[in-house]
Image (tube, rainbow, N blue to C red):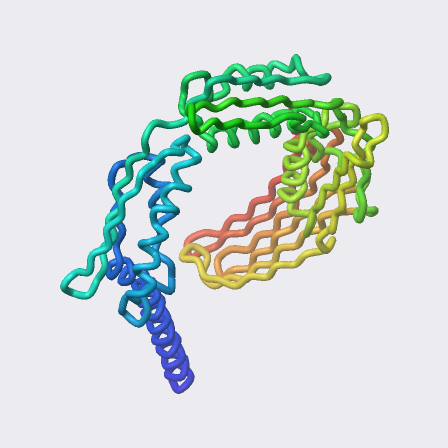
Length: 377
């Protein structure tokens, strides 16, 4: 009983500490909300993504509200800077001749309200668009499709955000296709604010196409290379693709055999445009034991022991064994897995299981064995 009382007090103390910590978090989160109430900003005249960008530019700085009060000097300074902030926030959407009117009012409760009225004016529009792909990959369908579906065209407002996104997507697609030296040899946006016209000049040079070169495994000398190659999603000679490197790393981590996996492929080390790939592995301990204690309504009190050998005979095979000893059930099961070279899902499995159940009415024993062969396609 004294032990139970001490444990109860310990649990009560922990619960109290958690409650205090949660209250502190709530108060901390509530503080910015209070600051937002003491100084509010209202934007008029623009909508959609343009309004969102303006509001982001006019976010209230942390030091403007201190100790529950608005610093009037900093509030007026913020109001004076608002017009410039709004003008810069409008430029990515093609508005270079905007007019901004601000009004800072002090409320009766001591809070401040900044009203910003925006007249964006006529946007700068695309007058000329020159998009080109040069180099060995100029005829790649995916690259040509992105040029054809470029979001900016003659007569539409000059959206710098769409321009930058499309540039990045075009370069990323070239890299995915194996053109690792792809670069823009021309990327200009020429603005004429007087005529409100923009000229876009963009040319992507793909450079040569790279492939996967020799593949080397480091750090897992106790595993046969034929077993490790099951996890690869590429082969030497195939077109280089970063996505396949990422999937290979994921396959090796999902195997629950290696603590860490690092895939290194530096195209600067390529010979004849074949990129060498080095896969650095840190294996888990070969032998693993996991004991357990519990209670089941159908078995009563129980203890269990799980054993794993994840590299049996240094062949990459796995041997699992589970032992359960309970009041009304005892069982022992073992399974031996033989990975087959080639596909990741191809393997042979052998299993044996013994189980004994007993209660007040009857007792039964079961011995079962199974062999299976799985081929992945």
